[in-house]
Image (cartoon, rainbow, N blue to C red; front, side):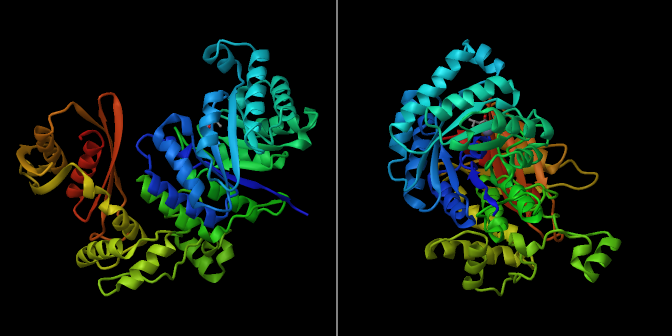
Length: 498
Ligand code: KIV
Ligand code: ZN
């Protein structure tokens, strides 16, 4: 019989550490419920001691979901564990995830400590956590760069202290797949009581090897994988859930099975992307817009004759319904509600009314409303309680004329106006905007998402603006790309202008 591979989702903890992608508690509950539907075994809901918001989210997620174990992160510090215990009060199944850095870099530079002292601190934290919960996971931070012999001593000590799961993070994304696989194998073969705990992978993607390393870990004995939806996470991100789930489904030579309902993958991906304003790269494996799009004539011909010629995954298996009903101006509320549900968004009737009005306005401007548009519309009223709002924007540009923009901003109910020229219409509009918001802001990144279906499509703009040494993310969507850019800039401003 195949072994069970436990899926530990950390979208709401490691994934949410991405600057600018923070979710509020209501949004986190929405994601957690979707993860439950997807069939994940463990949801890492947050790091409760880090902020009251994180604490509250762990409390509310614990109340909202039933089947998955809810996990809270801590350092190997009693105070952290006390706060995590309190946050997990309502969880039906609970786990504390505690740990400490084990590589020489961490021991010397972060803790100014010794190997023996690190083991003692790890053991003490596990024993302390076991006083409150039966399920305690220990992480050996930077295990990827920790010497295997010492790592085995750590793992053995924490299992003897009561750890039920031991996490071997490649925190910096440094390992090669055979090196990481060999590390897991070494632990399986050299730790005395290894059968008393589950070994977990936790790989980062700095060198693009997170999924390969995770699979190497599984092939060598790991039975839990720590993953995020769309592979989001700090820097280059974490191992992506959808990739691991589909690799396990496609390769029967890997003798494990998961509880993932793969047909929920696409909707979960889109929900996370939309709530976090984090676009999915078009060529992203499994969930990217182009993942199943065959454009070359030879491929199209082959796929039409037999899909298996060029496709190893049936798009329906990940929940992509190519025959989905296209929404147009004639679609009713029920069709919109259904589409939102398919995409993992459940909204009440009063919110549906608002989204439907926005839907009709958009359908007047473009013929077919895509899933991305629907997701965008459902998130659009997030700007409703913005302090700074766009009142109007007028831009003149063209060849042989100097672009000029006039802008009106409504700030806390008062209208402010300015005009400027620029080297292009967006530049002119942003210069005018900056005349009103007199702060030292620098535009760091500006991404216009590819227009997928035609010249009438909605342009989606993602921006990063630096202010006061911090980077703020913003999002705008509009059939007018200049308006979308200004909206994205204003979204950034609202993150620090109160
Ligand atoms: O990458 C890492 O080491 C982590 C730990 C805190 C588990 O996220
Ligand atoms: Zn991590």
